[in-house]
Image: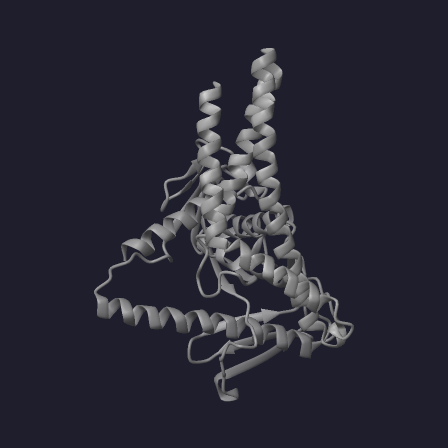
Length: 370
């Protein structure tokens, strides 16, 4: 890479970073940091633990964003010096190190740029993810469990907290369904592009003849509910079932009927929670998830009415959106964006950032066209 190429790349990266900072409104972000620091220093902050958690969590996020932006400016200055020294000393190893650092900077700037595309009403919120096995028998159930692990590993890699609300294990292998929360800045906006039907093609380890099997799993993503959301559910619209929590193979976890399943009769939506010891806690968590799903359903119905009046013909998100092929070749491909990789194992281990970025950009381009 010549010095001319480096200068051009750095100018482009600095221009992109400047546009990102403009969208993020850097002065406003700094003012918010000062206000949050003042609120965090209030001696009575922890009188309301929930409010205190929101303040400290938001402060941590804003500080991290400002540090990241300042750090990127410093890294750009440093990498320019690295290239100059490598060229003046004709040092191939130093040049390779500088090229690698430039690539790392570019990736960080791209991630920030994608973040600016998340401007939806609920994008900043935590996410509640549901994974359900579909057609394909034991392979579909096993695949659903792999997807659950994939998202939890992704959350762990990004220092996002996660909490599993409910898991329904299948008899032979894997899971029938699972619901869990991913808690971090823009978790919903980021993971919402994962919603849809995922398909796996592989040699079945549950078929004694070793034949190729196709399995399906559905992924649903909704934002967490907040106090400002106005969702009221009449008592006569909900059926409440209580049962004992269970683990793999039906093994009992609790000796009391603490698990709760809520069914919203008008829509047929079903939500269960069994992660808490208390039936009341499980019911409260399940109710919050149910309300979150109804909030999204209400929003989709309103959007559908607008699209109908406008004559929009946007495609459904519910059909197949990604294929995971393990045989006869290795490939994971997003059918909406065209992005693909041969690193199937890496994807299952949670390395899905490139798919998320492509999905967010694809969604934004569709919004602009509609």
